[in-house]
Figure (cartoon, rainbow, N blue to C red):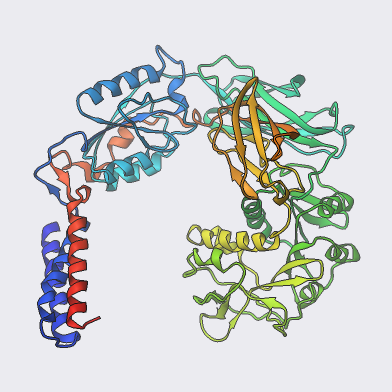
Length: 640
């Protein structure tokens, strides 16, 4: 049936190529002889889509792959030897028989014959390795793993559709483990105040009691006991902290006092501020109940590399914090919110309306860089943008992209099929404003701007005149457009503005395991560098050529100290940061092989010899040659 369909489509492609040259193009002498060239190119492209297995090529190393699990869970010292010892020996034996070895964990990587794989990946994701094997022409795949797969659902889907004959070999026995996934300490206004730490734990056996120790700058601060969540489960534990011993940026560490078979997830590190507020971050204040702040704040934090903190007004003098640094903090008063706003690099005011009190209206006098979300024309007038009443209906994004300072960011994002916006307020005058995005009522009619950019005395504003942008972020297919819009707006607002004051420092004080170490480089520190040490050993010495957020790649878990070096080589500043050693690799429970064996419907007939057509270079070269020959022939005959 498959090849009958191919024959029908190929016949249609040939007929189409002949019809174009015979009936559509001008009857130029000699040009009609070119239709077989186009037909051959179309048929060959169609053949690549059907991807037949050629009878030659055999089941060599290019068709037989070993996927070796190099995640940290393979080092768990359970029953007998760790899984890694047996699995790596098995992979080496299969490589000697001609199999190609590919490691997988967080990502899939081809292993050179001289490379010694190391089990250091913080997660176990098999589906990308299966996709790589299928794209690389593999037909038979053996997976050597402890079966703690983070993406079981994706693996089962891949086995259903990919043309692979997959078998699993499990290594390692049952491992006893309980661990700490993260610790978060809320910022405090002063050292005389108590605090709260949130510790996320996992694993253990049901009925067990886990003991958690909290350290402040290496000194034991407090200890609590809690029930174990159980295998494959997580739970957050709130721990009350006594007043801090000092002010400043304080290092906190949570340690689990448990005798188990896996040590990397027994400790986690974070930093908290006591008595100090970081200047130069993103601060959002919302006066209305809406979904927008929930989606907007993380995007602004990621795109700018700055700390992002939000406050939702829940009363006359009551603000509920939001954001990663204080998501579980206690409500604060208006003075604390105002203090954060005074030092912000980017201010976001959400929900300005006609009934706003004097305190809220006073916020419009601060912040040289602002994103303003008015709820009505009176709120827009507070931002010096005069508008009409909100227009109801569904406003769809226009495919036309007007010239603007953020057109480059928006050009790379798909704008088709975005959820419509609502309650659009149209400016009564276009003087002094730029519309980076256009929308049309029900997809037709005059185009209007749901966001306007304006430069004012002493700063810049982005005024949002429509509601419902959060629906883009809530839909996976539209999330890229949401990120591109607000990253572009934030970049324009912060242009020529020093990031995080004038301090060159790490973007995060506690970097997750395996992730890049990012640095905030202010314009005034371009040409400066950092020297990073772990103990007495220097592990990094680099100079930053541009301002913004620069990455120096991942570092091994541990404590680090850094020194900022000016162009003359003198050290002008110093600090510290940590790379967290904890991992969630032991959270997934062991997947039963029977559940995966039930999948793989597309793999029943793939054990045959041969090589997939898509893995050979000559079909692509032939297609390029045919297209070039047709183009040359058409130009010689006078056709375009």
